[in-house]
Length: 89
Image (cartoon, rainbow, N blue to C red; front, side, top):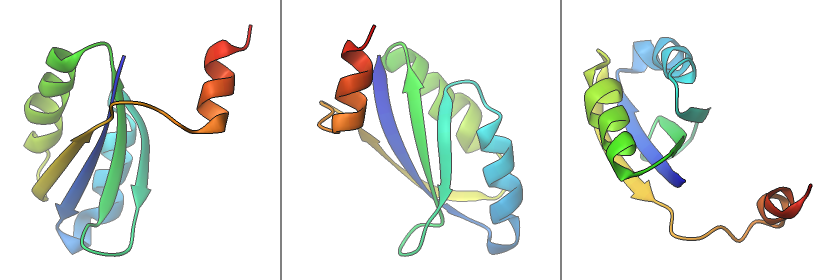
């Protein structure tokens, strides 16, 4: 499984609508409105890099109002919560 974080700059008047639309896309785990350089942070979980590429470039970046994106691909998880859920039965 591939986990990625996509940071987005979006049209100010479309933040809520874009966040809602993204939250309904298969593979999008969470969408956060954030303070700072970006408007939205999107957590994506896909089966592989090809599916990630399809989701980001084929689906997400075609949404009207998204101006700019930066994608960060996760190598490892260190969160105690995530580690415990991976090994729980």
